[in-house]
Image (cartoon, rainbow, N blue to C red; front, side):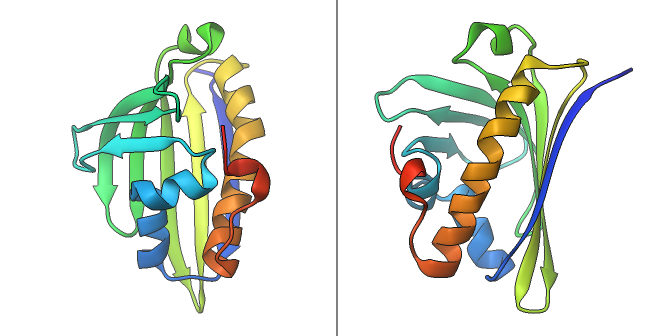
Length: 149
């Protein structure tokens, strides 16, 4: 089956533990993810969601795999845009690999639909979110454009 895939790899000057905190703790996430909250118990089978500052449900899903601080896999559906929501669930994987004084951080987002509307959307969103995350961890400040919805 043909599918749509987005992959982004960067190196962040931090530790796997600090990057893991930034990916799973609401106070970190809000700083680089457009002030949105990600809510989950971070256990396999737990529901997961992103909520905009105004309370709008943006994305939802479930924790499929979790291996702190190395790997997180989420079942992910867009709830905000009808065309993306109609495609159903995608799969998003974070992989953290220590490399000397940095962490090789890989985001893989995929769905079993060719030419996915949702994957096109995340292909525009992930680069700025990950760049802002990198900036936050390396300098203490996220990118201005990712601080608010």
